[in-house]
Length: 303
Image 1: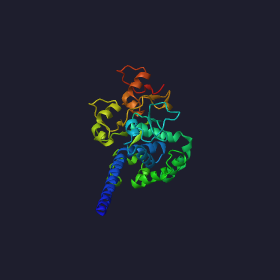
Image 2 (image 1 turned 45 degrees about the horizontal axis):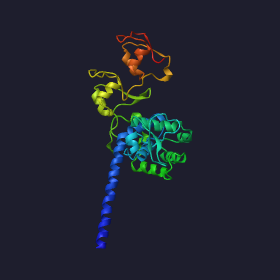
Image 3 (image 1 turned 90 degrees about the vertical axis):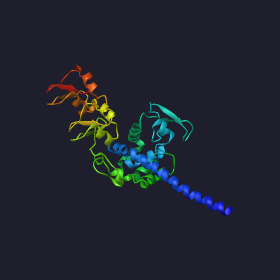
Image 4 (image 1 turned 30 degrees about the vertical axis):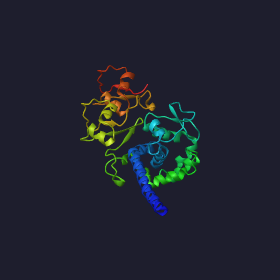
């Protein structure tokens, strides 16, 4: 009987282990599919390998399932520190009740992770490495003190290699367009650009807000809201379409700068060109809401 139970026990183990591994792989692949474009966006802007960003997020957030990720939208385990002035939550980590940052969105978490590495001098040496040197980045993060786990670098490298994350290090925003990539993954059909810390594309013949919403993974209602158009407006080729809510003001470098109105330009079109809200243009230029710009008019972009 002992032998029988022993064989049964080991047989159950052999069944359970692969099932657990398959479940984890499915969870991890789902997370990667959801956030790979966000990681590439951060790489383009901040020069941090997308593979490193994804591997850290997978590890630190347990593929988005940790309490910190679910309740605080903190996917990188970043603690408050003396510079953090935002909300926080208490989590037991290296010590009981440590203060961790809380974000309003996962995108804010990804952005803060990039800025955290960029502004902290102890990580400065990492930015001298090539984007494709994920091993150098992994060991560099551990050496700089990002995590206390002695195997932190090896774990990141293992994740990158197990899930082929290094392929995202060879991408650019323009790679997130037509066709299919490795493993038959679909990327953006349109080229992606950046203006005033926001991503946008240019509408082509046949595009609608509905078709772009499906491609970009943003609801049509939100796309129209972000781009300040009502539900009756139909896209025309050349229209700028932002993926997120525009900044209130134009870029700081445009302080005191005026835009000279060209033939066919509306105030809304000018707000799209500079990635700023239409209401701000009316306000800072003290314009009535029935104002129609004339060719040659000067429109202040930022006070």
